[in-house]
Length: 210
Length: 187
Image (tube, rainbow over all chains, first blue to last red; front, side):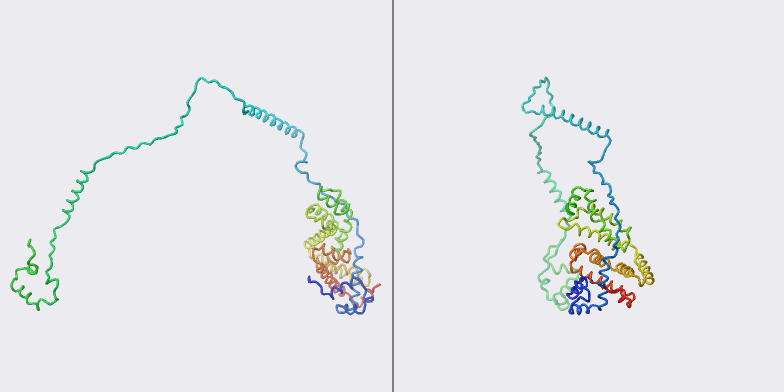
């Protein structure tokens, strides 16, 4: 409903506002008849003309009543005693600060040097500028203790290691072909000829006996 | 001083005298506009006239001096009507319409009947259509002024007027069509 009108609709509205149906040109009448019948057009036209006379008797408006403007902080009235109290307080503050400032300024003048005689001087604090740190180093011979400790360690090792006799295998054992003793004639000899000897004695006759 | 100068004074000094002068100039026309928009409710219209000048003081900083004061005032008035229309109970319209139907049956031949039917038709328009109709055909504003007041394009104003008129015609045709040729003859 909010779309703009096409040119024919705009023309229809223009004719409706301005001209009676009977006074329209034949072309305009044809255009109007595209939208409505002649009676409808007359009805609309009459409605628009009559609408302007609707509610013609307008009463007098009421007098304007404006709300009283709220006063700002600076325009707000206050009691007289509050005003005088405020003024007095301001003056006291002003005079007091003026005296303080005056004394301070006299003391702070650059040419104002005052001599003060004193008979006793107290030393309150000593400020040092250099601090030394001392460290004592003691040198001690450790030779005898070290040797003693070493000998104890060596004795401990001697005691701890057991006496183990490790046999050295002969060449025949090392390079044996893997035959059984039954096939080897030398082995048979050993078993038969020296039954009292241990196998170890026979295999390693060169080893020292203990 | 013209309207814009008076408004400038109001903005600067919150001047009650200038506001009273603006009220003197426009209150009657505003009252007429509100009465037409509200379907003849004079009391509410009077209240709205008061309210519009209070709003003028509250919203004076929103006034654009490059814009016509007259159209700006009617923009506020139109918005006030919209607010009132939103808050108004729906019963008002239906009651008014039913009473009108009764009256129509009783006074079919009466000349005032036509005016009443226009009022009834106007009350049934959508708010934006009614505003455009009232401003154009009852308050005689130009199309450009209406576009300014309603804050929309010229094409939109024409569209609203076109469809408002069509709708009003349909409502008027609901009455006895055979009597139209007799009673609705143009002078």
